Length: 460
Image (cartoon, rainbow, N blue to C red; front, side):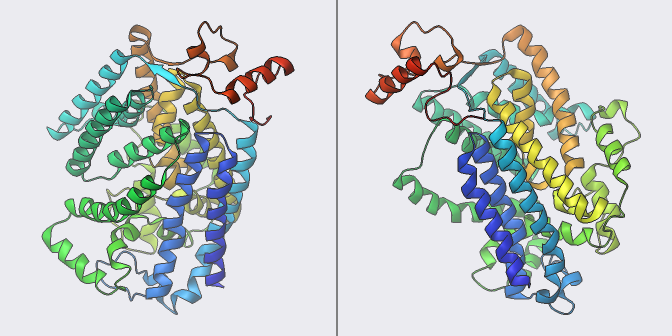
């Protein structure tokens, strides 16, 4: 039963990766990133547990005493059932809603002055954090990173300038990842690059596939090195001893298996299934997340910290002050059981579709909110309570960016022939390139039929 459920979850996630091609960009890439992320958490991790059957020992966060007693093959199916239900609901909802909101990614321009101001605010917040300043203002301004990255990369740059810009961003975000001991800054940049590359119709060539094959092992080793930055020498030696208990072909990826721990969160939820909090309390907590922290002094714990204290601690040792990724399946199961899983995964699909559409709109306020939602691993690893916190902070940042955009100019979608904008030059019509025979044929067909959609674009 366990093997069958693992295969079924893998099939659903592979279907999400394949069927996402029918969606418009950037939704296609966002859905594929989610599929890969969830595959690591919901398929790869249980596969390691079944294959290695690790005995729980100290410092081993992968081996789970809650599942090891009686054998992993016997117990894993209880955790996989809500996961399978949630992924099926999410896939069906995302494909249905995605077809109703077909909004292709449009080229846009951003005021350079606005990009500079946003980066300066972000740099000031980071320097303040490194100087030991811990306040709600600094904590909020640190969230400008995905907005700054998105605004810097949205305009169409010449190739040399783009390479230089990406190199500088890799340097700054990589350095901040090491200093902050977090994977989020560099992961945000990588997600942004994937989304924007796909949105500009970039397709990998054979040489790019070869480079990716080389980059994957480098990424695995780099991820391991990044995770070890915040660990002492004793902890690293303990983890090396723990990893030695696993098969040699799994050991290099153990840091990734440990980090993508959504499966552990679903295991947590089995001990409070439908009893963690009422639906009304969950809605109230989500609504309070939109109130800025200085005005909401009653809220002392984030959703991830509350999960660690109130849910995981019931079945597994957990210390306070740690924010855990709960995911929609685990959170929905803890609040309302399987109906809660279905409800949260449906709502997450709606948030994903609307977030991708906001990113494609080319408007400052919507674009800023979409950056905080899409370019962070929020819709991959957080439940709705955690997403509400991110969106609440994103609203504050978007208002701040919107105010500066009134003075400096903001994000503006470039007009195209499909918008009915006047075109004065041939180069304006065809994006700065010489028209091909197919371009002229398509244009003639549109003028004949009177259709205001690009040729080849399906109706809503």
